[in-house]
Image (cartoon, rainbow, N blue to C red; front, side, top):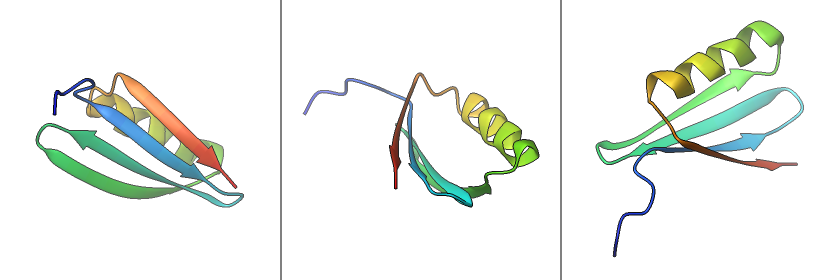
Length: 60
């Protein structure tokens, strides 16, 4: 199978938290963040640290 996207993040969004999974060629990492502003800013920084080019989200 051909690799299309090298670095992506998938997020499952809930009222009180967001679970994010970063997938790279090196593997995957999963983290959960609160939906309070300070933690959303940490989520953004975490995604940027992994140099993700694409983010997809599913909300419930």
